[in-house]
Image (cartoon, rainbow, N blue to C red):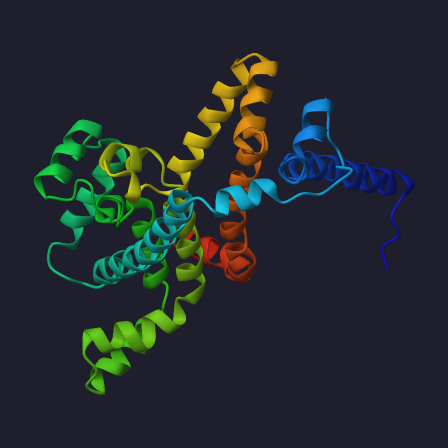
Length: 295
C-alpha cells in the first residue's frame, strides 16, 4: 500500500482548491444570468450587483415566451439541429466507410479531402455556390454546405479501419451486401464515434449565427442565435439612453428591463443544448480517442 507524503497531500489539496476556483468562475456567469433574469424591474434598477433577488419574478420569461418570433426561432433552430445532425452523420459515415474500404480512386479522394485543410473556397465563392443552387433563404443553406467536415470524416474513417476485417469478410461470404454490412455491422460497432461527432454537429447547428445572417433574408426563418443578437443589441441601445428616459419607456410600455430579457433569452438559448451532453458523455472521450489512436 502506498502512503502519500505530506507534500503529496498538500499538492492534492491545492489541486482541489484550484479546480474549485476554476469551476466557480465557470458557473458564476450562468448563476448571475439566472438571478438577473428573475429580478423585478424596481430591484434591478436600484441594485448595482445582484447576487440573490428579494423577489423572484417571471416577467422576462413571460415576455420572451409570448414573442411569436422568439418561439418561431426556437422551432427553426431545433429543426436545423435535428435534421442537420442526422444528415451530417449519415453523409460523413457513409463516405468514411467507403474510404475505409479498398475502392478504386480512394487515394485520390483522400488527397482531395486533405487538400481542404490547407485551402478553402472562401466566403464569397461559397455564397455564390449556395445562391446558384437555389438554397438562399432556405434552412437547407445552413445544413447542406457543411454537411461533411473533413476532420470528422478522417477521424471516422480511421475508426472504421480499426474494425477487424474478418467481421466484414465473414458477412460478405455469407451473402451480405456492402449496405447490409454498413448498417448491421459497422454502425452498431461505431456508437461511440457517432455519439461524439453527433454532439459536435448538434452544438454547431444550435449555435449557427453567421451563416443564418448571410443566407437567410426572411426573419421568420432566423435561428435563435440571430434573435438573441437582436435582443442583446436592443439591450445595449437601451443602456446607452439616459437612465431616466429608459426607465420611463419601460414603465410606459409595461416591459421588463431589456437586460433581464437578454439574460432570460441567453439562458433559454443555452440550456437545451447543455442537456444533450450528459446523455452522450460516456461515449464522448472514448469515440474521439479510439478514432485518433487507431489512426
